Every structure is written in C-alpha cells, then in structure tokens.
Image (cartoon, rainbow, N blue to C red):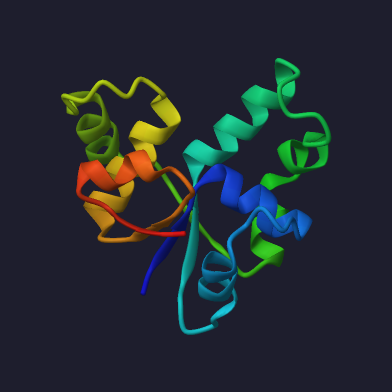
Length: 128
C-alpha cells in the first residue's frame, strides 16, 4: 500500500518517538509499502520552525530533502490538481496543510499515516 505521512508522523518516525502508534510504525517500516512525504509537510515544518512552534526542528527544516531521502521516502510534490482539490473542499477544517494532505491522499489513492481521526470523515484511508 502507498503511504503518505502526516507531518507529525514523519517527525515522530525520525525521532523514534513512542507517540507514533505501533501500527503506523510497522506500516512505515514494511519495505513493501512505498512511503511518501508531501511538499506540504516541508512547508509546515519550515513555517513552524520560523515562527517558533517547532523547537528542535531546525535541522529537519534546513535539510528536509536529504533527511527524507536518507529514510528511503519519496517526495510528493503539490500539483495544480492537489491544490484545486484542497481549495474546493467544502469542509470546516481550515488547516491548509491538512487540506493538502487530504487532497493528495484522495488524488493519489494513498493511505495517510496520521493520528487525525478527523481525516476519516473526508473519504481517505488512514492508519493509526
């Protein structure tokens, strides 16, 4: 199954944080599952580091591409289709990063690795 990591799942994976569920950790570690990281996550990390909401994330923000490549993860660019879908969502959820991840998971038929149960209402498959 093709996986798309939510930003917090990526951060917890990299840190070996036990907040990442065992099921999520197992899915990511399974070499049969291609794992992708969205450009939206790169923007979210860089933004949160810049405004002081992600202490300890400076290294990830500075070397995002190399760090995800070292993990064997694929980059998932944001396409015009993804952006259009995210912007057109008639949902009360306002977080632009989450909206993009939802749209990407829908458009690319990917399974989101996220603790956001809210995503379940948007027609995406989710593991946690």
